[in-house]
Amino acid sequence: MPKQTISIGDLTATIVDNAEHGEHRAGYNGIASLRHRKSTRSLFVDKYAGLNLEHIFSGVGEDHRDVFFEPRVAPMELKKITDDTFELYQPPTPTFHLVSWTRFQLVAPHYIDMTFTCRATQHVFNYGYIGLFWASYINAPRDKSMYFWGGLEGEDPTWEQLVTQRHNDASTVRHKDDDFQLQWEDGSRDTLYKNFSPLRYHLPFFYSNFEDLTWAVMFDRHEGIRLTHSPSGGGVNPERQTSNPAWDFQFIIPDYEVATDYTFRARAFLQPRISRKQIMQEYESWRESDL
Image 1 (cartoon, rainbow, N blue to C red):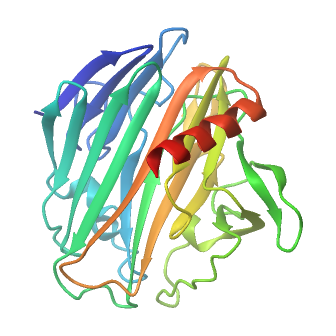
Image 2 (image 1 turned 90 degrees about the vertical axis):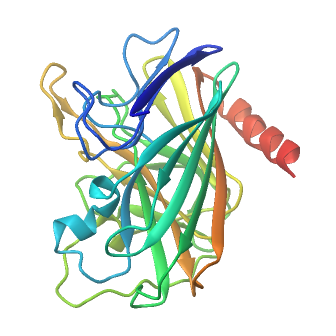
């Protein structure tokens, strides 16, 4: 099953493996298109995708494209689990020998529940950590920002805005208690996940604005989760004469063990514009029901 389009509640989503499907380019997986019934276009750039597993990284080999973008080129399968749930399965990859399962479930009226699980099958991560990176290429929004609850270290939290001026510039926001230091080869390529904002988030979610809708991604933990922004990661939209930003996130697994499963869950939603108070209520309600 190379792709599947489903409509539940107010959402219509096309879920894909990393093969080419018409306008959708090869090398991008996850959700190729996501529309709310009140939107005029897909949230994600049609030729790319959102909630797309982009990188497996360990600080080594990043200058080799097939290593840096291994999830793009390694085989991947899309399976139907139920009428509302689909799973992307990637067998052990050629370089990192990492196997993973990503489940997407559409939940009425406007939610996408995502569960990711991975397992290292060999000791090949040179610095002892596993890094994973998801990219969402956004379709020329007027407001390119990601908003989150946090602030500068030592300050009381408030609503903060992350909108970087250029690619790889203060790109990544860590949790206030995240002190894990990535290691990488000297002289290796610059990346979004190596550049840090002085801001820290306090609660593991962000939201953004698209047309008259609110897009949010909420996580079941802060451990290992990092939020990342690029103003131009999805290239340029000539028709709208602006860039396509990337609203991204990472999952860092320090001191990994072979043959051990590592999992996180996330809930995303796309719904008509709501207030910050309502966004916070969405997060709190989901976390309470998830415990």
